[in-house]
Amino acid sequence: MVGTSDGPIRLRAGVEWRSVSGEVVALDLESSAYLAVNGTGSILWALVASGATPARLVDELLTRYDIGPEEARRDVDAFLDSLRSLSLVEEAG
Image (cartoon, rainbow, N blue to C red):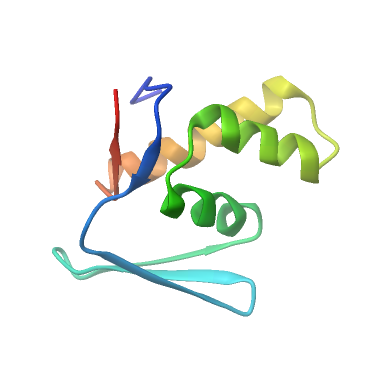
């Protein structure tokens, strides 16, 4: 895992996005990088956009899907690591 913050994680300034037909399309205005996220990722994206803790994201997956806590945490960690690797999020300690 790249980051280990338990505090809120949110999209950084300069990331614009829209939900279109169940898919999130995002543009990083600084790098002009385009990203599309569908399915579970679009659910997590909306929560991150409003500022959510990793625990909140895990809880959302547990509520929506028939998976265990370990799988939900792995999925959230992978999703957040992807956003971190693209420098799309900022974290509060």
